[in-house]
Length: 116
Length: 112
Image 1: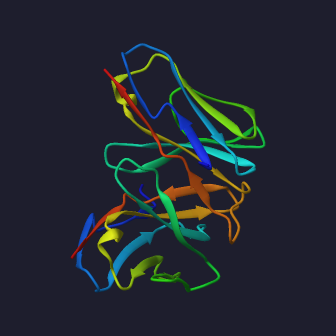
Image 2: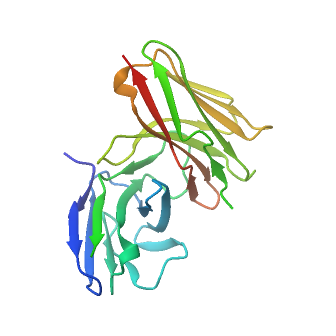
């Protein structure tokens, strides 16, 4: 079973559309994250939720909105998609918000978003 | 300001030899460090980590060294295998703030 799963894996959509990427973890972790990998393969954190509460909200456009219906799910909704939003988006989870020895971040396989 | 830097974008090593991947950081608040490995079209997978209270952590063929005074960590892979060919990311974490920062990655190629 996949520990952190994201859907869809591939998504091609037109500019201006609204789309969502779903993420689910079955590890029983309290903290979930969304990362964006840009064209230079650099992973940048966008959001982090701990027990459904937003704890990290990096500088991203307001068009990006995370939603956490429960602590096993963290969905990413993007409004009015732009060409620059094309990237790979990774969902991740960890045991606790404060990473302690023995804990680490588990990643999903990524969602490849292409805006045309 | 990039707080975590991997200055070598690529590294090529012969099978059986040692691979050394380097990572430098600037923020002294980082207290936990991790290395991830990433194959094309897949998410990164955790390799090995080290807390700032240690200077070395070993797991099989992988050893991570931390030099706090130099703000430098390195990943040693011995012996290197062709299956180790991938992009390696180092990540630094300020556990008090719960923020993780990744480097740009180093592409390792292990030649048979």
